[in-house]
Length: 215
Image 1 (cartoon, rainbow, N blue to C red):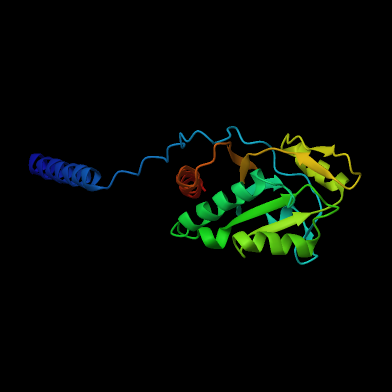
Image 2 (spheres, rainbow, N blue to C red):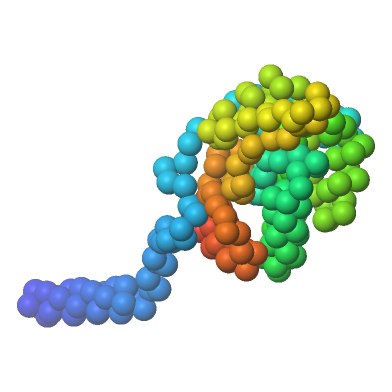
């Protein structure tokens, strides 16, 4: 009788073990962790979040880190009297923005920001008219030299005002790169000339998908 009880107990244990093993084998494997993008523009490790700064947007309202937080931002420094680099770059960003329209949620979280380094001539009204030519959704802001310097130095951007023969004639040497800021206001990527809209859009897409997956 004792032997039969032991045999039954052993059979029950065997059945339980087989069932457990079968269930273990049938359980789906966890998905592999996302792979860091290998895009050439990515900045890693990312620098610290932006320090506070205050510019003025096209509506005459204060513009600072709060307007960048929780958004993917493509940022370009320039000025409206720029004869070549600025209009060419903004036209490229216009195409990039259009190419990213099908990225889930990008239009709700993505934005293009033009920061004018010419706070004297680029009033909110003038900036609004200038950027609307490329896309009415584009953001623009400027401000006094001290605030612009405080912002540009955080990116290591060198801005130099060059005077002409006429005291009212001047222009700026400024970076031609486009910076990509993440929702935490850190620089995520830097796109340097020559700028290709399709290439930038593809890299932005990959970066956004990666960071969305790891959040």
